[in-house]
Length: 419
Image 1 (cartoon, one colour):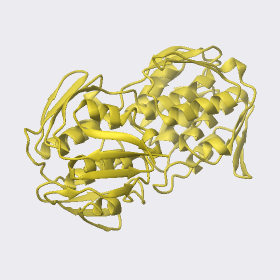
Image 2 (cartoon, rainbow, N blue to C red; image 1 turned 30 degrees about the horizontal axis):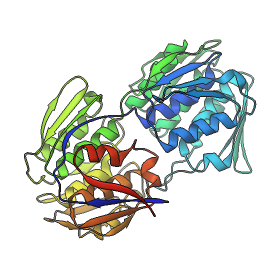
Image 3 (cartoon, rainbow, N blue to C red; image 1 turned 180 degrees about the vertical axis):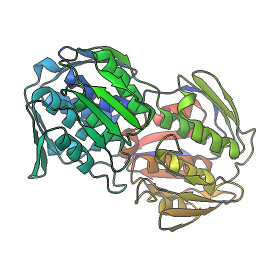
């Protein structure tokens, strides 16, 4: 096990490239199972979740080839096993995304109930109910979802709650169903739209991706295609906060500013000067301390839950006080007690954190509890006096491509060492 050592106090400055989106590449890799021929996926980030997904596909007999640029070619024609085993699924909730494609393409699927970050209940019942409405026989036995269907049929699906993976799973399943499927109260995230673009390139007929009503006209078969994954908006937001929290100036290239409207509005409210191009963003704090900003998370296009922990760290050292309300997950303030160890003044009541900014934080040994909590602790370490030790950083490797290297390029004093 490794840990990160961070010596704070440096204003970040420089330019880095943003990697492909974790939350887009995982469903796209699952979607390759729908094709009759190989697909090529580019702009793939080097992440633990990606290698876990590749291991899962390989365990099923799928052939994968990776070049030195992390372009992945997936040939599903060699698939032998329609089971996603517990030992892999337990480490990554996104493994549930193979359920819809396998069932739609091969008529059966055996997928372990998932694990992943301990940030609250994320039930898969919406996935199951949607597949049942499309004619599948689904049973949960021995910790596995066991689904059967000769061929799924189109249906009108009204999702009780907005669910990204649920929308993606059902959209993938619907591509090979007979007839038309309408998914209402669908997730609108850019990653859902990117998955739809990949499926369309395979020959699927999809309308409304990126809105709350997606219509899928089923086809007989899909072919492999080539696709480049969109940039990671959460990685982008995290490095923008890194620039803001340190009073620095950072330029991020190969990104998508149009996917970050809610985050950019909050950064401007915090005092950042932003310049934006088609595929780049520059943030300049001009050496100033950020102003506190209130945050309320909600499904896209509102403020993303995956940026809540980072703004908690920002508010911890900002001028003034702020409230941070989490409406998406009920257990997503586990980073608060660790930041408080560094001198932050934060009180949590229910789903709201009340933050009173302090002038400085002080280095302490802290422990990451989930992916985005890891990012918030690193951000806090960038401004803390002394050397902060962040333990259990395997969480960060699930979602950030070489984070210590990119922060070092911006001038941070950060290094990875064995635990």
